[in-house]
Image (cartoon, rainbow, N blue to C red; front, side, top):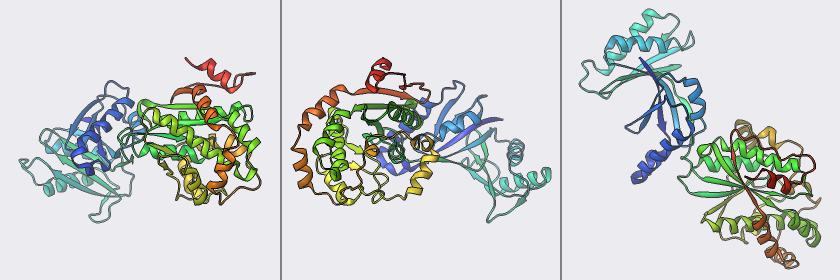
Length: 410
């Protein structure tokens, strides 16, 4: 007997002639994350088998749960096709099912030369289980658990149940995107959903020191670390953009109700200029329709007018409770609610333009030379590669954000 893990791909079967590229990329992402050299891989018939060779499945399954593009996986026992061996393997798997549950044995016989039919194998295995293991009963229509047997040309596989994967597409299969990352709840969730859909995400955080604290910048680093879990190689790029001078300029020249509108327009302008440098086709943000006063359809329209790249809003139709549930599931929520405000929340005026007009936004922007400020920001940016085991700490006593970033840059 040998334990292995059977992996099923998500919607990759719908990709037609491109299917092989998606499958190969999904396999590559799995191998990038599994460092145990004992694990070997076999790809057969739209499935991937991980032969554990002594590695613990309890260490591998949590890794597979972070790989987009996988529908589900099962821990299987691989045996030769002798019926007695199949029965023993099935009994061992049945013992992992809680007592007083109902089961159904289901056999798929890919090897049509096997001397027993699928139904005969199922009946022989079920009888063996019920004879040697009390506490389980049969239910052919609505069982609590399925005990599955697959008979293939070389081996037989026995497994119980399926573990849900992330689904989606392997990272990088859908191209690149710049995700605007604040320190709040929403934007990390938006970045995660883009990663899950196969987008190779680079993060962009606008830090407004000295208006905002260095702890706010540290939140961005900590959030990036959580998102790196789902990205390729367990790493993700974070661009730290010095927004403080432009932030102060907006507060000086722009009427308070338009602060947020102009600020967002400047952010997407920076993101687009940066994205165009390496042909990144989309910008991603965490806006949700109507969630706050500034996230109205008119506000989004006025923001989108200043860029040619599409702005993708994965959270647009989600309720706040749904966003919070995802944030908790990906372990970003506790970081996001730390009381260190970023530039989008620190100076929110008492009155926000919920129905802004492009005409007024353009008039206010003509009051200052934002092009030079945007170019200076891009020149002064600091780019970090954040990994899941990163220990980067910007909160060094007495240092500004930019000084701390210079100190930690390689």
